Image 1: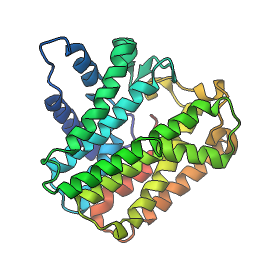
Image 2: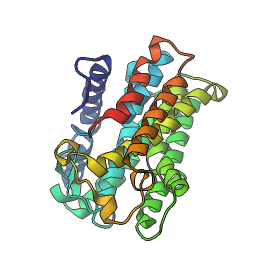
Image 3: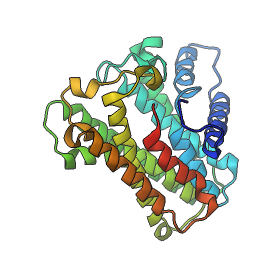
Image 4: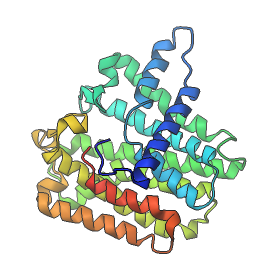
Length: 301
């Protein structure tokens, strides 16, 4: 993964959740013996064997704190990863970012075609909510409903899609730091926040007890995007597995362009440590969440 995680608990946690998500998607997406085969093959191409799985690990690590069964947490993690995968398929399309590479391999519309890519994204979006409706995620229908509500809110116009729309117009307008922060809180932070929130929901943590987790998620969400901007500014495309330095070419304001690389790096580090501080009421059971906060600003892809 290109991570500074030599034989660490976080490295093992990543490897475990990556295996579990791949196995789960393999079972969820059997290829039919009919004309839909190409669609499901594209869904599998996008969902299996790619990405760091930060969102699933956030969900599973949070759920683990509150004693949620591993199977239920992994299923819910597949839902949020399905949303993430759909968003990347659509983000890579020629009408959006027009990218040819993702996770070190051709993007879905390049490997298949644009129409199949659109349908694969649509189908992964639908799959996410189908998963959350399953009793295997939770026997409690109220828990399932809250999971659906949380993921839907983080995915739509008040979350990821809204942030993406702001990003679409970012090259046509001059955004200030406040607006860029808002854009990234929606585009990137909303889904990261949903991952933590959904882990707490599965653990039946009352809403009034989630403030520290929401603060943690808010800080890592911003830190994650600042780190992304730093990678886009000076990262290695080979390690990143995607095109870099596109924001500058499109005239988009970023944390790096507005703050400078050094200040942006310092801000990301400060946010990561602030996120860790929000977990002070937890012991060793929150170790993976603490390690994730620091990993987010140290990663090289």
